Image 1 (tube, one colour):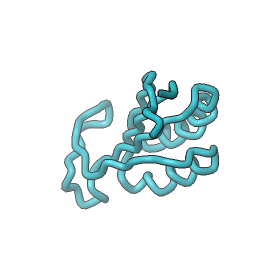
Image 2: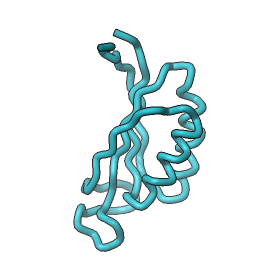
Image 3: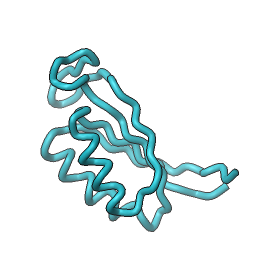
Length: 96
């Protein structure tokens, strides 16, 4: 197993393409996107059936610890502009 940082980024669904572009620019090669999420936060409640683009989405990535600061710096402006959430946890990548 390889230690990594697991990053979960919840943003408005229309922000996902830009977020993925920024992550790729920082060398993040893989990701998983969970779409049509609902929830509530400091900007109110979000439903998964909103006409504005399907509510929220979560982008999940795993990066080496030495890449974390660079990735967070590209995520932060997206969150400031449109809201959302970013969680970072320690994880272990099962190498296969």
